[in-house]
Image (tube, rainbow, N blue to C red):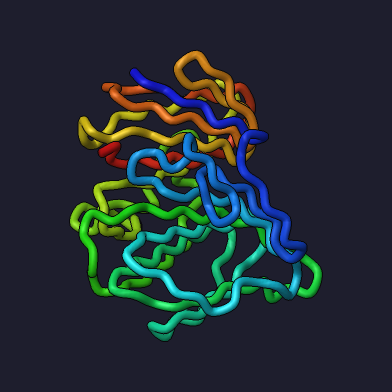
Length: 238
């Protein structure tokens, strides 16, 4: 087993006034050669957007982009004709492929929006752009794994498709409960991000916004010291 721990306070940070963003991996003005990626997981940004502010129209290409709201609602508009709000409990996936443009805004006059944005490097370049969004039943992640993103050729249930052999799970663990992680492929690793609470993985304790990457494993347990919300990203390491 190999592991790497990324503590919450070791992340890069950018304060743009309207946006406060913590970068787990190198992004924009935060460049750290030791923090470029975890396998095919290239970006994990923890963004806080102020009321009535947001990201103007900008382009993306050849990247799988996943947005997970943690607080508030984020309005989305893109060049494919999608115009929707993304709310807590929902997950949004954009396969940028050959190229698209989009904008994201906090339409609230009073409340901040906090969301995670993940970028996963695709296994195939130049695919047709695609947009998917789904509201997931929170009861389905209580003390068990809920798959919210999966490879486009292996989706089951409500899992949203991406162009990579990668999966995203979420779980809400009560104190003293645990879930077992078993990689779908031997080359895959898990990046385990604590949204809230306190957990233990492979003898290591992690608290709110801490993360641990584990790979070269048959299985690993995620155990909760207290009520905890966890997002788990399974990605190819090569």
